[in-house]
Length: 200
Image (cartoon, rainbow, N blue to C red):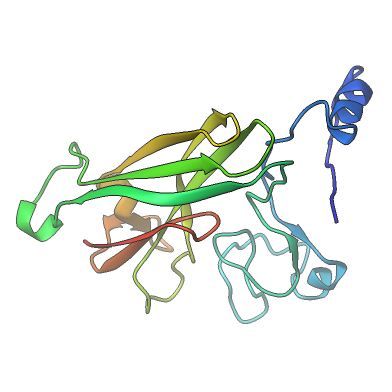
């Protein structure tokens, strides 16, 4: 099923919504938050502002919760066309080989080919997440680290590029201290069509 979320579109919102519903405009927006089912209200107290999961909460936001109560996830979006992703290139430099970089140099560069595989022209927003190494308590499931929007005619392709450095491979602990986290990180797109593993 299709759905249009319009929020507060203003006085011309009706025209914009009609253009989408009647196919005059190909939608390309993505959700900026997660939509949960009513059951989630029984899992998390409204007075609990903690994002990370703990004894009385499964966690919240896309960074800490991907359970059955998610109806529409962060970054979800619909289009009248379809897109295909392929990894074009990945230039990965081991941080261990570099030594201390000081956070000023991009150590990982990823290029992704996006192709409009449908019959309608449209825009696609590519979301790229970093997934930290497993096994640490309180770490996020993933974090958005880059996005790029491209307009493609039917059959057309484009390459989008993302670069990641020290700050991207860093996490904050409960006290707010930030440090680069070593281990096997994964770079993934929102649709899981592209995945790159990098050792930090």
